[in-house]
Image 1: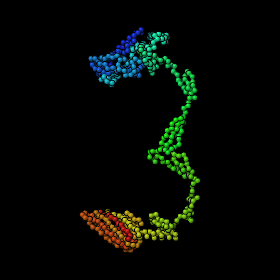
Image 2: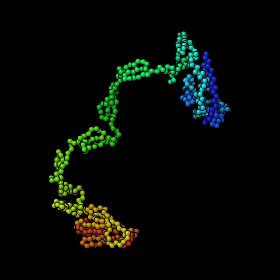
Image 3: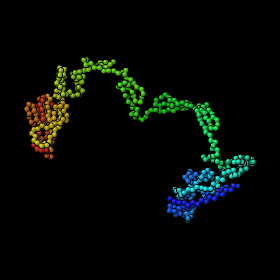
Image 4: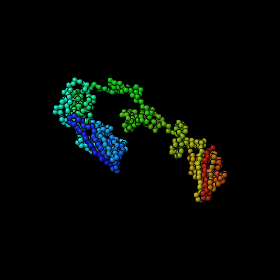
Amino acid sequence: MIRSLLTLLLALIIFNQASAQAPKGINYQGVARDNEGKPIITKRISVRISILKNAATGEVEYAEVHEPQTNQFGLFTLIIGQGAPATGTFAFVSWAMGNKWLQIEIDPEGGNSFQLAGSQQLMSVPYAFYAEYAGNDNNFTAGQGISITNGVISNTGDGDSNATNELITGATFTADKKLRITDAGGTKEVDLNVLAADNQSLTLTGTSLSISGGNAINIGSVNTDNQNLTLGNPVGTNRTVNITNGTGVTIDVADNDNSSTNEIQDLALNTGTNILSLTNDATTVDLTPYKQNLTYTPATNNLAIAGGNNVTISSTLTQVLTTNPSAGNIKIQNVGAPATATDATNKGYVDTAIATAIATNYAFKATYSFTNTGGVFNDSPISLTDVFDDFNVVASNRFTAPSVGAYSFTVTGTSALGGVPIKLKITSGSSSLYDIKRQAAYPVVTIVNYYDSNIYKLNAGDTVELVVTSLLLGEKVDGLLFGFKL
């Protein structure tokens, strides 16, 4: 970081009103120091010189880069105006316009990482450049063929009748309103800011185009470029956009996103007004003229629709089962005592149908689980839990035969503690007990397995229970009871 830079500005500009030109440069001398204030000695450094407009932070009008060599005291010298230009042209610095500030930036390593060393306002000496271009009438010297009278420059002709030596090789007009003309004698500049008051503006009102301080013209008669766009008839998925007096453009409007969800619209029916509407469509349909009412006549079992045919509805179970003998696989159960002769007929039919179904197609399966949590159990019933029981013949702890017949019962189980005895208890007028076979498992003899299967002749209403005898705390047995009617 550059903490300070001692600058000595030596601007030796000599201007001879008669014939000499001002030197194209400003002598500059300074001492480069480091952050500790020590001179940067015997080293090539980079210095960027900038001439700023109006203030120390103003716009850069001209900038250039130098690479001077410091001496044993850190002293370096350079000529402003003879460095490598970075911004603008030194010859075109507008010394006559506003104040000028000199900004110094240094890179001690000789690169482009410049650090601000300081800035100061340029005073009177550099303004000798202004005398080369402007000032007052006495600063201009008329050449051959030129006269200057009261600030007016006139061409009187050079009198040599030679057109080749008056050629102008270049002319530019800058953004700050300066005209620069280059010929064999060099580049001359004329400040045209004094003519700024002659600016004129164009205004368009309707079809009338006018210029400030001048006349107006009607451009309506030349407005003949109006064109209309029209949409042609669809051809497949193509539509053509046409323009009058031009070439149409055909566009494929097919929906190629392969998504049906973004075309979905919802139908809505207002039941109060019978209006059917579609989302994203203003069109609606009034369904009132198409409304029809259903009526039912119990005496004749007729169902009728307005403007349509009557339908006779089957009202007896016989009629229903004639139409669909399986009753649609719907169970008929818990039928109560008949209240009328018709109900009695229906119940008899149902009872017969149920008995027939059980006699030909019946089976059940239940799980059981017993654990002695403290107490004495002597042929005590074990609770049963349905696995399946389509006709509800298994209660919480017993099976009830729905009809006379032969029934097969199978008991399986396992006991990991005690191997308690279990039995089937058949009650048909009196009760009988039948032991369930059990044996120790191999090779784990502490586990007892149960398995037995028997067939019993039962009457309607007879019951079958699974009972257990247990005297010790912790004895347990779990298994299955299942069976079917032969």
